[in-house]
Every structure is written in C-alpha cells, then in structure tokens.
Length: 76
Image 1 (cartoon, rainbow, N blue to C red):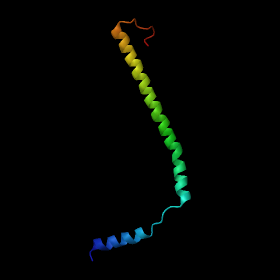
Image 2 (tube, rainbow, N blue to C red):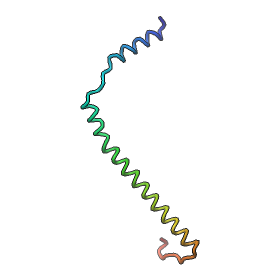
Image 3 (cartoon, rainbow, N blue to C red):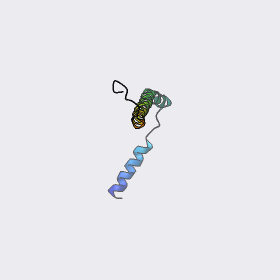
C-alpha cells in the first residue's frame, strides 16, 4: 500500500463522518443572505438606471447639437 493509498483511505474515513447541517442552520444561512442579495439587486438596478439616464441625456444633447438647436443656458 502506497502513501497515496493510505491518504485516500484517511480521506474516505473522514468523509464518512461528515454530517449534513441541520435544517435550522440552512434556513438561518439563507435568511441571512436576503439583505445582501436585496441590497445588491437594488444597487445593480440603480446603476443601470443611472447609466440609462446619462446615456439618454448625452444622446439628447448630441442630437440637439447635430440638429442645430440653440444651446440651453447653464450648460445642461
């Protein structure tokens, strides 16, 4: 028996002792992820809307310039 076989047998023995976490532990873990996922989702939507708005404003300004519309006072 090689040292690799001995190590594999040790790993199998340890793996056989591993137990599934309780339902309560799984439930608490999933519930604790909700605020993180909610915050991440809200932030992603906010970033998307901000980029969409900036793109719209930039496109609108470029279209006005190409059409020869007079520039708005205040640089907007």
